[in-house]
Length: 162
Image (tube, rainbow, N blue to C red):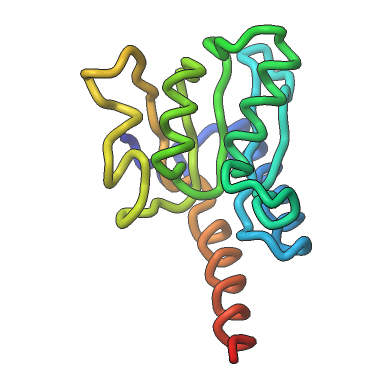
């Protein structure tokens, strides 16, 4: 995994992460855990944009990454997303990391890491040599912004808990 300071990141990484952040804010407005994802083709086309929708859809698999993978596969007409990059505001969980491996996404860029439950930093799914695919990971893109959204959401939840 590579952590990149702002000065070294290229403009597309920041631009696409900002789009993922907008998706996370939509999730927050809907009362969902604020995680957003964007999948971009190597030619720069945005294939998918999604946010967590587990509460709205009453579906435990309706994470931003899963919904975006489904949209991108439909847009390409193929389940193999070999020419794409996934941008997500929070490190993918093990379920989402498994879907990323299955979809053959070659690069995953995220804002904030989740060392306790992350599919890469904790469980190493995205780079497991025993699996048929590994993804390059770029970590910490607009991390402070991504972390602030999650922290604000859970602080609000704790404040309103009985």
